[in-house]
Length: 258
Image (cartoon, rainbow, N blue to C red):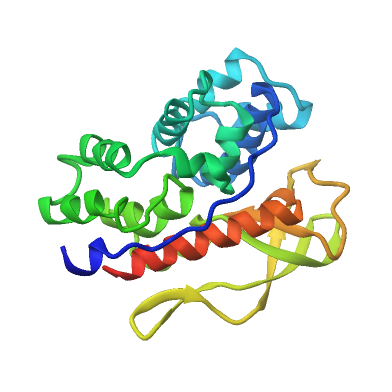
């Protein structure tokens, strides 16, 4: 398998804090809202997600809506099963997929390789499937960044332009206004035929939909996570470290066969 089989080490991270599944569902909804709003993934549930986020409530109705995200939900089930967690929407599992934590390290590579084979067989060319199945041994983790950098671009989606918007970005808030934030972040770039993080640059991140405004307490100097230029979460220093670590790791894995 050549370069595909080279190991890319993602250092272990400390154990995630356990919080309730309702919190996990709302966390998932924060990250899933904007791609759903844009029509990229999930069912026709954008108004419902917005209502739940606005009211800060979660119930079985929200769970049903979140299960329509056919890209992300199977990863949650994989992570939960590998860690002996009954609920895929446990907040530790949700955080592992979108941000990254040590639960990802418990998904052994044979289990992950089988997951990818069973899930994407018939959806990608045989040669592309072979590449994907080889990625777990090469260092891939069940993280959103891997899905974006390696899976998404092999399943009929745009190859490059969407990568920076679809991955979970992060940046230090430099300015706040009623409609959004300005952050300093490092975009995804290509360098010598490899994917990498580029030089810091400003980006405009929205936090309002109509009259609804989110993350009221966010302030300059804090680290903001965003998805399709939508503000999702103010990261703790530990979460910011995890997100950067796994993003860099998945960039390295993707670059082996970019």
